[in-house]
Length: 164
Image (cartoon, rainbow, N blue to C red; front, side, top):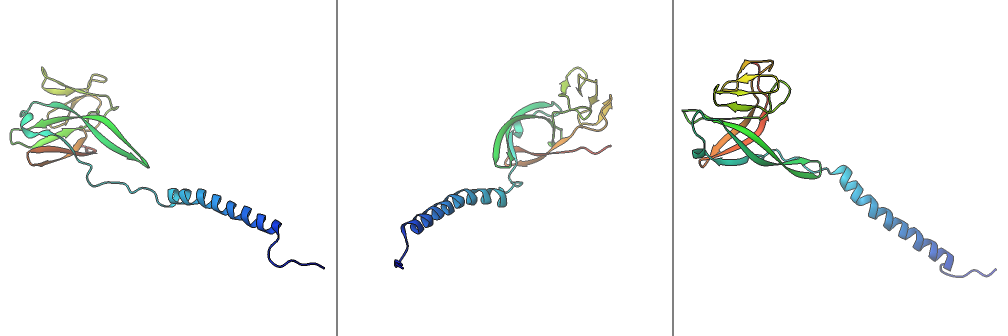
Protein backbone atom coordinates (compact mmCIF):
# COMPACT_ATOMS: atom_id res chain seq x y z
CA UNK A 1 0.00 0.00 0.00
CA UNK A 2 1.02 3.45 -0.72
CA UNK A 3 0.29 5.86 2.16
CA UNK A 4 1.20 9.48 1.77
CA UNK A 5 2.58 11.49 4.61
CA UNK A 6 0.60 14.63 5.53
CA UNK A 7 -2.90 15.58 4.48
CA UNK A 8 -4.56 14.77 1.23
CA UNK A 9 -6.15 17.35 -1.03
CA UNK A 10 -9.61 16.12 -0.03
CA UNK A 11 -8.86 16.48 3.70
CA UNK A 12 -7.42 19.95 3.14
CA UNK A 13 -10.55 21.13 1.30
CA UNK A 14 -12.84 19.69 3.98
CA UNK A 15 -10.89 21.48 6.71
CA UNK A 16 -11.10 24.77 4.78
CA UNK A 17 -14.85 24.35 4.25
CA UNK A 18 -15.47 23.49 7.92
CA UNK A 19 -13.31 26.45 8.94
CA UNK A 20 -15.34 28.81 6.74
CA UNK A 21 -18.56 27.45 8.22
CA UNK A 22 -17.21 28.16 11.70
CA UNK A 23 -16.31 31.75 10.74
CA UNK A 24 -19.75 32.35 9.21
CA UNK A 25 -21.51 30.84 12.23
CA UNK A 26 -19.47 33.05 14.59
CA UNK A 27 -20.25 36.12 12.44
CA UNK A 28 -23.97 35.48 12.95
CA UNK A 29 -23.84 34.20 16.53
CA UNK A 30 -21.82 37.02 18.11
CA UNK A 31 -24.16 39.92 17.21
CA UNK A 32 -27.22 37.79 17.95
CA UNK A 33 -25.80 36.84 21.35
CA UNK A 34 -25.01 40.46 22.21
CA UNK A 35 -28.52 41.50 21.13
CA UNK A 36 -30.24 38.76 23.16
CA UNK A 37 -28.12 38.65 26.32
CA UNK A 38 -27.08 42.30 26.73
CA UNK A 39 -30.16 44.52 26.24
CA UNK A 40 -29.71 48.30 26.43
CA UNK A 41 -29.94 49.82 29.88
CA UNK A 42 -33.08 51.84 30.54
CA UNK A 43 -32.30 55.41 31.48
CA UNK A 44 -34.35 56.67 34.39
CA UNK A 45 -32.16 59.49 35.65
CA UNK A 46 -31.93 62.62 33.56
CA UNK A 47 -35.44 62.43 32.07
CA UNK A 48 -36.14 66.04 33.01
CA UNK A 49 -37.13 68.46 30.23
CA UNK A 50 -36.49 72.21 30.48
CA UNK A 51 -39.71 73.97 29.46
CA UNK A 52 -38.80 77.58 30.19
CA UNK A 53 -38.08 80.31 32.68
CA UNK A 54 -40.37 80.86 35.65
CA UNK A 55 -40.89 84.50 34.70
CA UNK A 56 -42.88 83.50 31.58
CA UNK A 57 -45.69 82.04 33.72
CA UNK A 58 -48.25 84.40 35.26
CA UNK A 59 -49.88 83.57 38.63
CA UNK A 60 -53.29 81.86 38.36
CA UNK A 61 -53.16 81.99 34.56
CA UNK A 62 -52.80 78.42 33.20
CA UNK A 63 -50.61 78.13 30.13
CA UNK A 64 -50.37 75.18 27.77
CA UNK A 65 -46.70 74.43 27.09
CA UNK A 66 -45.66 72.19 24.20
CA UNK A 67 -42.30 70.43 24.48
CA UNK A 68 -40.34 67.49 23.05
CA UNK A 69 -39.34 64.44 25.06
CA UNK A 70 -37.14 61.49 24.09
CA UNK A 71 -38.62 58.06 24.67
CA UNK A 72 -36.53 54.88 24.77
CA UNK A 73 -38.23 51.74 23.46
CA UNK A 74 -35.69 48.91 23.54
CA UNK A 75 -33.03 49.92 21.02
CA UNK A 76 -35.12 52.67 19.46
CA UNK A 77 -35.01 56.27 20.72
CA UNK A 78 -37.83 58.45 19.46
CA UNK A 79 -38.57 62.10 20.05
CA UNK A 80 -42.23 62.87 20.65
CA UNK A 81 -44.08 66.14 21.05
CA UNK A 82 -46.31 66.48 24.10
CA UNK A 83 -47.82 69.21 26.22
CA UNK A 84 -48.54 70.22 29.79
CA UNK A 85 -50.81 72.73 31.46
CA UNK A 86 -48.63 74.81 33.80
CA UNK A 87 -50.24 76.70 36.68
CA UNK A 88 -48.26 79.12 38.84
CA UNK A 89 -49.83 80.07 42.18
CA UNK A 90 -49.34 83.37 43.96
CA UNK A 91 -46.76 81.84 46.33
CA UNK A 92 -44.61 80.93 43.25
CA UNK A 93 -45.23 77.20 43.44
CA UNK A 94 -45.72 75.47 40.10
CA UNK A 95 -47.99 72.60 39.08
CA UNK A 96 -47.88 70.97 35.65
CA UNK A 97 -50.88 68.87 34.64
CA UNK A 98 -50.84 66.08 32.05
CA UNK A 99 -52.98 67.05 29.02
CA UNK A 100 -55.47 64.15 29.25
CA UNK A 101 -58.77 64.09 31.11
CA UNK A 102 -58.90 61.31 33.71
CA UNK A 103 -62.25 60.09 32.41
CA UNK A 104 -61.40 58.76 28.92
CA UNK A 105 -58.15 60.55 28.07
CA UNK A 106 -59.63 63.36 25.98
CA UNK A 107 -57.77 66.65 25.64
CA UNK A 108 -59.14 69.40 27.85
CA UNK A 109 -58.64 73.18 27.74
CA UNK A 110 -58.76 76.20 30.04
CA UNK A 111 -62.12 77.97 29.97
CA UNK A 112 -61.29 81.61 30.69
CA UNK A 113 -64.93 82.61 31.25
CA UNK A 114 -65.63 79.86 33.82
CA UNK A 115 -62.06 79.92 35.26
CA UNK A 116 -61.72 76.13 35.15
CA UNK A 117 -60.43 73.32 32.97
CA UNK A 118 -63.13 71.87 30.74
CA UNK A 119 -63.17 68.54 28.90
CA UNK A 120 -65.48 69.12 25.91
CA UNK A 121 -66.15 65.41 25.29
CA UNK A 122 -68.09 64.61 28.47
CA UNK A 123 -68.18 68.01 30.24
CA UNK A 124 -65.89 67.17 33.15
CA UNK A 125 -64.56 70.30 34.83
CA UNK A 126 -61.51 70.76 37.06
CA UNK A 127 -60.33 73.65 39.22
CA UNK A 128 -56.86 75.27 39.24
CA UNK A 129 -55.58 72.56 41.61
CA UNK A 130 -56.82 69.83 39.25
CA UNK A 131 -59.67 68.65 41.49
CA UNK A 132 -62.89 67.42 39.87
CA UNK A 133 -65.66 70.02 40.01
CA UNK A 134 -68.26 68.14 37.92
CA UNK A 135 -68.70 65.44 35.34
CA UNK A 136 -67.86 61.79 35.00
CA UNK A 137 -64.10 62.15 35.65
CA UNK A 138 -63.29 59.69 38.48
CA UNK A 139 -60.23 61.46 39.92
CA UNK A 140 -58.21 64.69 39.76
CA UNK A 141 -55.93 65.55 36.85
CA UNK A 142 -52.62 63.67 36.62
CA UNK A 143 -49.52 65.77 37.27
CA UNK A 144 -45.97 65.89 36.01
CA UNK A 145 -43.14 65.84 38.50
CA UNK A 146 -41.65 69.34 38.51
CA UNK A 147 -38.45 70.89 39.77
CA UNK A 148 -36.98 74.36 39.61
CA UNK A 149 -33.27 74.96 38.98
CA UNK A 150 -31.63 78.28 38.16
CA UNK A 151 -35.02 79.95 37.64
CA UNK A 152 -35.98 77.32 35.00
CA UNK A 153 -38.88 74.88 35.21
CA UNK A 154 -38.15 71.21 34.51
CA UNK A 155 -40.82 68.56 33.91
CA UNK A 156 -40.36 64.87 34.74
CA UNK A 157 -42.60 61.83 34.49
CA UNK A 158 -46.40 61.82 34.83
CA UNK A 159 -47.64 60.86 38.28
CA UNK A 160 -51.13 59.39 38.53
CA UNK A 161 -53.40 61.47 40.77
CA UNK A 162 -54.88 59.77 43.81
CA UNK A 163 -58.56 60.03 44.65
CA UNK A 164 -59.24 63.05 46.84
